[in-house]
Length: 431
Ligand code: HOZ
Image 1 (cartoon, rainbow, N blue to C red):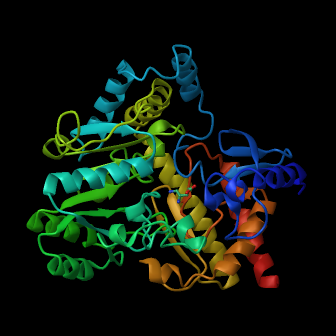
Image 2 (cartoon, rainbow, N blue to C red; image 1 turned 30 degrees about the vertical axis):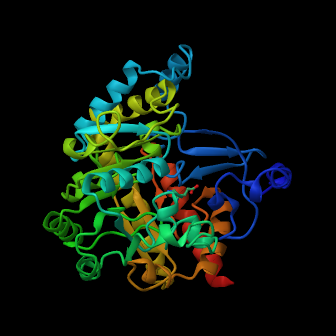
Image 3 (cartoon, helix red, strand yellow; image 1 turned 180 degrees about the vertical axis):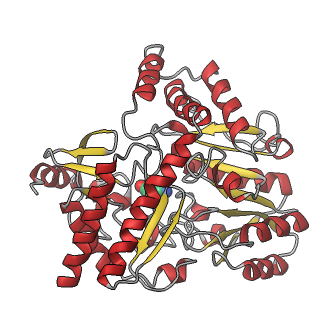
């Protein structure tokens, strides 16, 4: 495969952009090789600067639920932009999307738009602290909630593969208010709460973790957190930046039947444009300025173009719930194909899947938290990633990221993915 233009762009980029990329995971450091630079994408496929075409299994890390360059979203963006990309003042589209989000997400009575998932989680923690009058919060090892200072402690995703799960620049004062627990370990959380009685403002969690690979909550775990938060006056926050509107129209909370007090949302509600939001119960959100005393602001928050894109995609999902059946059946077919290959080839890799999210871990052990995810052979994954890339399948460039399936995969795409996986596993065995 020819990737000369990508290589040349990368070497130019490195002169002006730290590491040549605008987000670390994209640098391919965890898998070896140079990043591919993309020119366009449509439906299930992306085309790079050298003209190679790939079936996209990341979908912009979640938002492209309906595939790339969806015509309805495109049209809405064009219409909005013709009336100015930013007012810095309120507009009708903000009201429409707020009404829709409150209708779709069970935990949200009031919602505030921001510009990214990072902003959403930072703001949600501030509100939880303001509401409870407490300073500390609990996060889970391997969960990633964006790059806000308090979250870069045992963070998953790029922070983990770049070797900086505890980033320089995060002060010890900040770090001391972040308490850590292993995912799926309710007893550990209960112990931390007991040791910090009356001091914990919030528990924040990805209800289905996607930033240490796809890791599912065990039966009773989220329910246990809910009960603990109720008993101790702690605000339960679900970070649904990746699961919101993807696992069900009301996100993981609807699908798994556990309703948090607050929810953070991200890229998905912008249909691919830079957006985030946080919301929750009225009595908590009433603490947000200008209604209440907790300050949070943003010039571009709720900008008309992002609102138009997001609203159009969410409204489609709301009006077409059958999309979730399609997402699930696409993903199940892929996973069934993987499992069949593994069985035939005598491999016992662990595959975690829920809805349209899945990961194949290069380990034969069950993966249910960060420690067990780390059993995966990352070198082998790097090899596999590049073999798949050469066969035209664009995977997340890290073992510790989930894959996202879109609704527009054709039967041929699914067949191609399964065949590429089978051939790549055979190559690995042969080598
Ligand atoms: N794990 C990140 C998405 N939640 C990867 C994307 C990025 O950091 O650029």
